[in-house]
Every structure is written in C-alpha cells, then in structure tokens.
Image 1 (cartoon, rainbow, N blue to C red):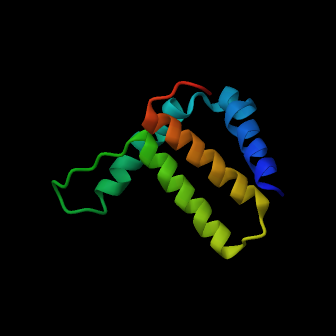
Image 2 (image 1 turned 30 degrees about the vertical axis):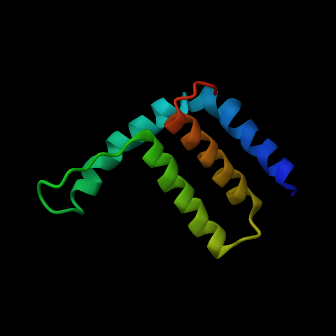
Length: 99
C-alpha cells in the first residue's frame, strides 16, 4: 500500500461507518478511559493519581498497533489502524471537532 492509500483507508475507518457505529472518538475513548481507570489503579501504589484522558486512550491503542506491527510488519491493517488512532488522538488533543 502507498502512504496515500493507508491514509485514505484510515480516513474511511475513522470518518465513516465506525464513527456512526461507535460514536465520536471523544465519546468512545472517554468511555474506554473510564473503564481502564480502575484497572490501572490496581497497578499503581495506593493513593497514586490516575487520570486517563481520551487522547491517552488513542496513544495506548496506537502503542498496541506498534506492538502488532513489530510482530508482523506486513499486516497492512495494523498500519491503517495506527494512522487512524494518531488522527483521532491528534484531533482530540488539538480540540478539533471533525469526525
């Protein structure tokens, strides 16, 4: 795949049906952050501050894709997903509102 094709495929994922199925990345990643928070609290010392933001979820999901790419760099879907998570995280962090 060319870089343009990867970006176009990522755009279809994050701006198309997936957004309709799961809601905005802000809402979806916000819910994931809420669900991850109590699990991560079990991994840190008692009383430690745990604050997972929607953009943190995008970053962690991107790292998941990086790990998968490290295991199989020829699996194109992981590259597409990585681009999609980067786009969603950047939009959330930058205060953008496009879906």
